[in-house]
Length: 437
Ligand code: GKR
Ligand code: MG
Image 1 (tube, helix red, strand yellow):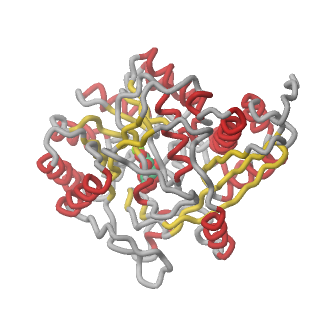
Image 2 (cartoon, rainbow, N blue to C red):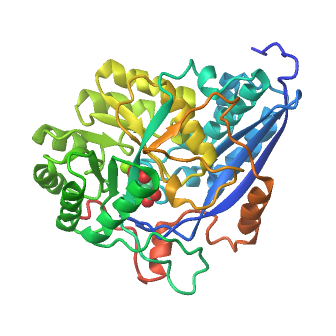
Image 3 (tube, rainbow, N blue to C red):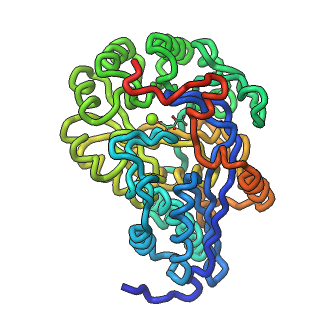
């Protein structure tokens, strides 16, 4: 049904700005991050002059969907979030972009890519932009539009990565001051930097990069350096069930949870049945349809939401309710992102009563942003304030500079490809088959 128009709340303009953001050489099981990663910045403007910001994945397949959706949103009411979801359903997805059923999403390690998931990832950026604009129009923070915050700040974990000191020579890239991390000492050094710079007290190591014994040694070194602090290890499904069970047994006394040790619900269920360690996922439960088989088979004890691919902030709240019903924990996963997404994550996280684990965020790895003021972590937490909307402001010069980089790119980095970045130093590298160990 058509919504009755409210004075000033009609959407008059939707602007899409793809950007390339500097990214350090972080390693994962598929390869290494490219020097620049694509993101899409969405601006929604209302008749009354309120403007809202959203952010989502910026690879070409997301842009191709965002463009027709942006056109269809003009003339709609900015509060009509159900219409955003309905409109996005109507946008066609190129079957090549959705990926083969059962295949890994090569770029993002985000579980199986389907047309619906692609649409939801795009919709999330528009939903957030509409909520931000509505908040500005009403003088209310986004958390209030979501029912109100139950906490004033949200805890994040330090997201540790094995890392090269620099991108390969000859590849245009921004330098970073984190140094390399390729062994247990490097990982602990990086963790100390995270703790000193931001006060994080919970640590997640991205694994699946080195043989499991090396990663076990790194987690042991973290446990010795940060006794009794929550630790997690996430190899993105790179291990067999046998390897997962062995790692779980060896690290069971120090891990808060093991994240996606094996790929897919049946393998996770087997690991869960054979070990006492809680398993978390952002790979086998990434859509509502995947919840029932995973929960009924006991495959996961914590679901890590990513509001982008779950379809926005309201869907994240729905997911949290389902998790609560089944006694499954909930927290948040992250991909390379900017401050708009961090603000959105923090607002929704502040409204979820059953969020009992620190959320993940890549934000400390991004030295660049499109905001006038960077969001800060204090004692590992982001404060969720009461300013209208998301409480962030766009820096147009920064946005233009990062967009210029996207325009100038020869096409190599407009789509995230960690395996291609790895081939620069290791010719012949292909995404390893899973399980790798
Ligand atoms: O950025 O390399 C990365 C991560 O591995 C990311 O792609 C994952 O989606 O952070 C993610 C995770 O927790 O699996
Ligand atoms: Mg993960």
